[in-house]
Length: 565
Ligand code: SF4
Image (cartoon, rainbow, N blue to C red; front, side, top):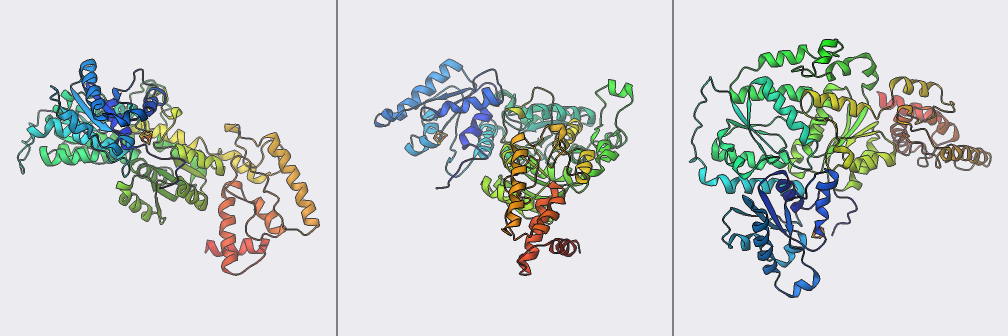
């Protein structure tokens, strides 16, 4: 048993649903208790799809358990086939159905349907959603293509130089993070470098499309969590090389283009050169007017422009699926000048890659699907910005730290109406805006550091986000300060910030903890709020290492000097 309040991923059958819902001509019969239809809402509400997912649930109830639940499976499969006439049927079970062991996939396979039936065995008690999606795609592709597999060791025939190379894009799914728009960006990139898209799967593909996968020269593994198993199988059975770079960020997009050049054997130097020369602010009107400037992102110029100087060294904590976390770490450190103070993932399969990135930055990776462990790690690292999932948005809000969402799990606001890819040149523009937006603007940061007593622009205030402390908070602050004065008079331990936590204040910045003398605490309060948590923690550690029982102004500065050495 594991006490779980929030979970980063759903059960594996939700991953299977994502694949089924992505495709056309596929139907999924899910042996599941009444109530599991809740998963439909993920698609119809969060992703705002205009159709129910292509899923038939057996919806057995308690009273059915005494009867023949296997017969319910057969009836559901038969009815679903007759009603929806799919080209391919997926059959599997949810967690509860797994316990009653009706083996619905095998049952359906024995029914002699005139279409392929894929038996999904997804162990719900040990695996999760992305694994379920990955397995479903793999079994579906394997079912349709196994008979066409090349004999082991077969080499692909050389492509005629006059024929443009063709690529499959594997991995985008329903409920994936910004997949809808990422595909458009990747198609634009392929167009720029002279590569045709063969099949995009599973999003938008039919089983007939899947059968055309072997026609492509190579596969682009766009979302490894979903696509890697399938790409590896295609490589073994159809000798299709894999493009592994995920083009999130300007540097990664350039590497992606270079890797395609290598794998496809085409010259991409012109596109790469243009991607360097075209990265200006695009203030020239004629260039602004032609939004289709190939090979150009505004991000490099925006992050070099002087207003971004204050971003340098901002402490960032990153958590998400491995693909997005790794991409974010590169952008944050190489393209925006942030300092990585923490990174982690809930994708255990890709833990090694995330650990490597963590090692490069001298931090320890958090590999966990326990949000409490992530919350503890965030609090300890005391970052100024959190890049994470919907969960980290909650964590950061509680700790008063700015946050942007970079990965699933997401909520409805991260399936926006506007064009908002993460990949390619435009993806880099979107990322720049989204990540910088939650931070306090440079001038305000500077002024609040200088004039702490302002009535309106108080500690933690971010006027561009309307995050002034509320009247209640201000009143509470005044009350707390008054109480402190009284406490000081009585020489009682001071804890005068305990009642105050304006939005944007660093975690536990000046609340109880450590033995702070009144003068030490007053000095601590002078430190800008977004780094105060870190300073407090460092000073307390410095004091406890040396057995200092009362932290004074001097202790604070000694700690600062010692740590700065
Ligand atoms: S079967 Fe699984 S997904 Fe369905 S309600 Fe039970 S625990 Fe949730």
